[in-house]
Image (cartoon, rainbow, N blue to C red):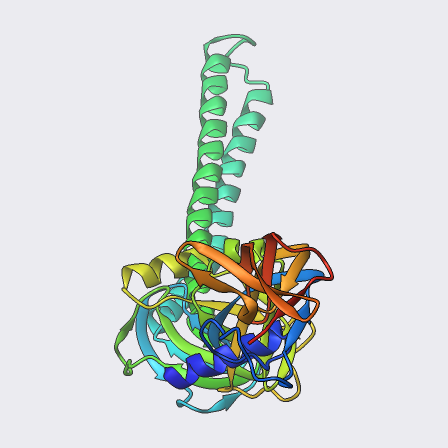
Length: 365
């Protein structure tokens, strides 16, 4: 961790290298008397931008995809091994859905039987209706039109037609229920195979055996795409990244643009509940740099504070005495102690709010 922090500090120093270089020397308040002929180190007060940079340790990692089934069931076959390279569409794991397949075959037989039997039933009922109509139209010499026989036949006809309508509805409902059951079973069969959405290497395989029950939503396989890299850093929120003036990465001695990749809410909650350490993800909008390799150390750098058109001096030129901050302003070759109000300080510059003017020259020990 100490090496990581040191590397991170180095990256931050390189990024913030600005007006005054890296030749700063540590020291206490200077002795005012110097031997004759010794050169005095000075710097002019200039105007420029000063910024605060925050650094986070990070690593280059391959893009990963967690794969899971949308239904629970007993595992029939695990088709891959840890570390195996797989192609898009390759089946990684299968659930045992033999019972579902057998029931589908049974439903298909039932539907075929019902198709023939129900058609015959409806045909017979329609014949009964046609016969009743024929008898009503027949000129029966024993009854007059509108008599008791005709009323009975009309009641019989209505009963036959109602029975046909009910039987038609019953058959339709029976068929619908079977088709619905078949559709559900077919969906389970279709979802019983876990396939790779894209090519990659299996970097995680759940410790499950054939016959064990896999739960819906349980991560069973994790694929890594070594041709698609991203960054994982110490945790920072999306709001912090959005509020920054600039977000970059320092990888292999190069400054690289990156974008925050928000964590899925469900994943965030799950990791919190599991007590896992949180991290942050970043993608490369312009593609990963050519020198980046999975496992490389990197630093994520956020530019969080910017002062534009600020008066700047080297931070080593500032001294403190009790609650007073002062510099030695050089006037006609002599050092004059001058009280100042300092603002933000970075590694290589300090902001002067009051007490100096642009062009003033200050002593730098």
